[in-house]
Structure formats: C-alpha cells, structure tokens
Length: 138
Image (cartoon, rainbow, N blue to C red; front, side, top):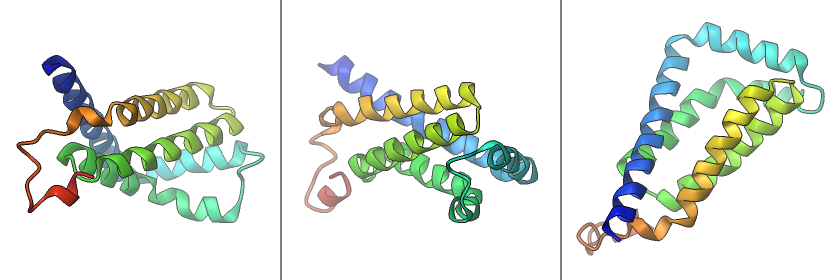
C-alpha cells in the first residue's frame, strides 16, 4: 500500500515537472513555438478555425498552470480532468494536421492523466488534510 502511494505521488510530481519544463521551454523559444503553430494550422483541415488559432498561443501558459497545480498537489482531481480533456483535444488537432508522432505523445499524456485520475484516492494523506486546507485537496 505504501509503494502505491509513493508511486502515485512520484508520477504526479514528475508529470507536473515535465509540464512546467516544457512550458518554460516553449515560452523561452516562443517565436519557434509560434512557427510550429503556423505549420500545424496550415496543415489542419477540420480544426482550422479563427478561435483556435487565436487561443493556441496560450497553450504554454495553460501547461505551466496545470503543471504547477500537479506539482504542488492543489486541486488534483479538477486539474487532471482539465489536462485529460486538453491533451485529448491536442491529440485530435495534431492528427488532423498529420503530425501523428506528436499526436501519439499527447495521447500518452492523456492516458497518464486518466491513470492518475483513476488512482486519485492514493493521494489522500491524512497528515495533509486538516481543517485549514481540506478544501485545497478535493
């Protein structure tokens, strides 16, 4: 039982760190990130809408927020649901743009979020839950 708790927490923290680092990299190399977005939208057929093209440059900042919440262990369930939906949508978009390798990677991220969501009860450490911060963890 203790190893399950440890593995859940390590996976959640590593997933959060990965999202934080990739988002920081995309912000540092923001012109390169915007060029990749242009390539994706030039190849996309179904998801080539003005709204998506307008909101797409915000993706690194969304990933940073999700990664920070996962790393800190705040609002875990809500963040995992959000990341699952977000990564599934990214995978569909990348499949539409014919970038199958990156779509597969985003599907893997979606599956990690699903597994963490299914094992969400592993993170209920009674030492962390007191009357002051009980609402932060659920």
